[in-house]
Amino acid sequence: MRVMVLRIGHRIPRDERVTTHVCLTARALGADGVLIANVRDSQLIETINKVTDRFGGGFHVEAGKAWRSTIAEWRREGGKVVHLTAYGIPLPKIIDEIRRSKEDKLVVVGAEKVPGEMYALADWNVAVTNQPISEVSALGVFLDWLFEHTRLEAEFPNAKVRIIPTEHGKTVATA
Amino acid sequence: MRVMVLRIGHRIPRDERVTTHVCLTARALGADGVLIANVRDSQLIETINKVTDRFGGGFHVEAGKAWRSTIAEWRREGGKVVHLTAYGIPLPKIIDEIRRSKEDKLVVVGAEKVPGEMYALADWNVAVTNQPISEVSALGVFLDWLFEHTRLEAEFPNAKVRIIPTEHGKTVATA
Image 1 (tube, chains in turn yellow, brown):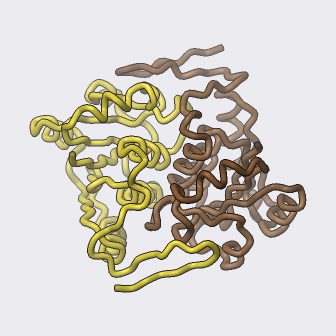
Image 2 (cartoon, rainbow over the protein chains, first blue to last red; image 1 turned 180 degrees about the horizontal axis):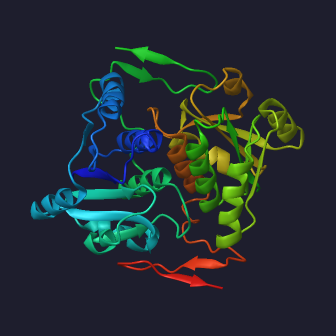
């Protein structure tokens, strides 16, 4: 199963840091990449590509395609769409159904207001708590649950730099 | 067990949005409050207090006290300190030990560089993946694990507004 994140509503410069956090979270917790809708942000892509180059894995970021056509194409190819929103069905109630579906998943996270249409387009509107929360932590918790809490110690292939877990201090190994 | 989050390295305006995400995450996933170290940010406190006033619960935010004295005081009162960092011990390896300790927990999250001293001061340096990640998602995943994945459907007392989980759309109930 392929898992991509679709970031909608990204604005420069307002969302640069938060969208960077979305991308790092997606990569660290096992998504295959992030699509940033509607806006080209080459600086952000460069930042994330540098992290992937150093720390490994095949994470892929691209930006600029309209969110509606991204979703339409995803569905045409047989993929399913998960929209993370505080208004949705609580994650614990819906996660088994999502895990049972073996289709590729597009996980949509918005910034500020999300177009009303998105709620209809999603196969699942999923709430990581029905409380105001951050899309960054909602994405992190969702991916952790989707992968059944198994991805926190994953190794990333082709890493130039690896962090060695340390009780008190910082240890880094270079390839 | 009381769980407070200590946000260190907060800078205005650079970290306003990310620290807001830290606070919303802490509240939604069951922490009792956030202490923002060293910097007074009354606008941020007001933003979070408005959320708590509308959506309920007794979440508490304060700002301005030096991080070293906050940690010293916390330990003097018998509390333990968890520092979230990619350099630490993977969460799955250390979570049982942390859950077994019944003392109050101060969960420290940094912005950008964290003073080296912090790694020595923490009872546990905990990695939510040994990868570059966001402190927002690291906090979310950590709290979810700390509370054994049970807080995602918690009700908040004294809410003026409640979100009613909905498959496709937005439903809100007012008290």
